[in-house]
Image (cartoon, rainbow, N blue to C red; front, side):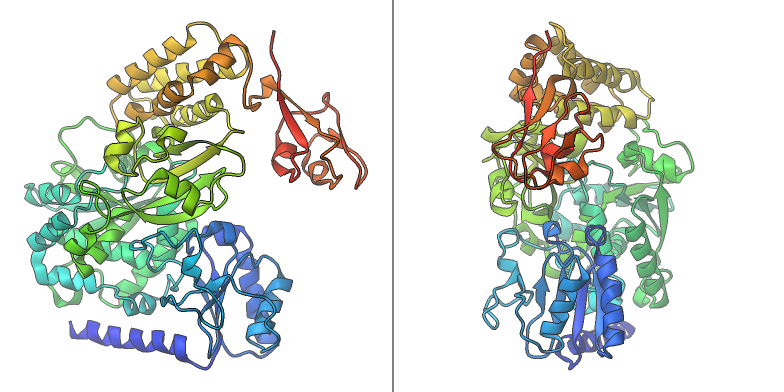
Length: 622
């Protein structure tokens, strides 16, 4: 343990110098969202700018802090000022002006969006970044380091309490660790919310050796990016949680099953593992505790069904990813027929903080049955897209409107739980965000994807989209899922084309209930949820499509046509630039024309117009 004390001392000194030294420090948000917004180019430009201007300072890559709608983000720390955050730094001119203002000591005309000091007091008239509407109601436990530390520098992690949870685990012993997790009330954050301590205890009590610990990082829900962002921003917290879980269940081997579509997350995990191996934090006799544990990465091919535990195990074993009948459960007979515990990324990344702060402390957040916090990915028709962490029990209204900023057009629905979840409408906005409440409304918590929809969304089209996804991702092993989802997609496609028939709704409901009751795994059992919830809460839209052959939201291509509203068109030409078929023409600053014979109904003009000058008119198919 003395060796770790030396690591802590070195880490603390480096962290202190970073924040109090005489040299400027620039932090660039280099998560996937930041890179997609141009952060990589900005990072390279700043490196060159420092070199050309002989500026002595550090440029540090950090992960996503969660406010994806503000990307690319750039922070600057100079002597005498707190760490200042600047948003939407997406071009060299803006980056140059910020550096000139704050590092070269010019006029400081560009104002930061806030400072990142933990204190709430104002600094030089600058408000706290944490007081932004998207952030002020969050409770950041899992995301505590994301966007603030270099994810590839273990000293940054250690300086912020890293691996002290592991040390506490060694002090308590395996049974003590499980008891602490029981006190915390932590439930699995990947799906149905099974109590974590029970899963660990079952595996620990199972006979058989060796035992395995698997981290499920196969995040495949459309619109979900919680696990990816967490790994990119703080990989060491996940790895520490894996060590604690492995220690608790008596395992000596761990796997991280991660989809190959997450190259940055994989890169940072590999870097973190190499560093930990060098420092003796993974491998044999970790920190002289007598506990040995190795961790391997398994890159999956991106099959959604491999998020199911038994399909994931089959994939690691080199077989096709297909679910197996249960029982036996993985804790009894899992990887290579041995006792195996599987938890998702968020569950394991929470564990280190619980051990560090105590289970009782963690249980103060959330509700009686749903303790702690939950990370959510806000996507869709919401003003503030990004990654958030909130206490369980918060209402959907608070998440969508207070944190997410609401929708541009009137709110219509929110999809929770990914393609296996359900669509909830305005009457559910005051529903507590917890496992029992969502299940009671016909949806699920899932891994945390949350897609917001407004009145421009067709709910029949949404149901078709999600069911088409799950149908294609079905492994094909059981008939209800393989055949039933395909038949449902075919019916939905007919309905959205204006060819719906009387009785389609009854057939959809019958097929949905058959698939739910007859499918082997969770994919099939939950695949009909989007259809069942949209039928329950938006049945009028189905009836409009079937009876009137009309799409009320003017979304379904065969039931809509577009036109330019001359009185609103400013001639900005944004629609001309995005139209792939040349259907829109007209000189700048004059109302444009839309040739319906050329229009392919791609909706690009409708989406990009800032003046609501493109109308999507619902047409009736006779």
